[in-house]
Length: 123
Image (tube, rainbow, N blue to C red):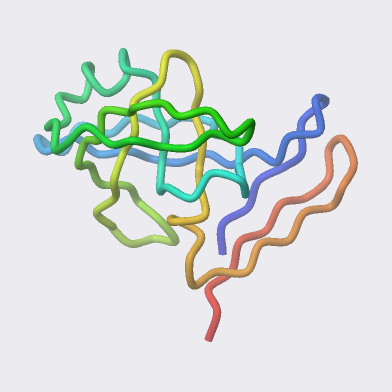
């Protein structure tokens, strides 16, 4: 089970550990974004710090319907106690966990500041 909390801005937050190919670990607090269909979005500065490898440039449609492009990197996270390969999209400032990483899991959020966030594997 992965545990997090709802912050004062009403965002569901979890801490996630990201691994570089050289096994360097970086722990970051990330917002869970159910409107983001990718795995993980990180600021470019963190991607550069971890030395993740650029895999592709992807087009994406944002929530407002506009089209943008993202650099897509390959990385690994410790997710539910296991190392898992993920696609990482670069952004300017955001740390987001998307629905791609939540696939196969149940997400529960207590909708109040300080509320509990629980992510459990589906059986």
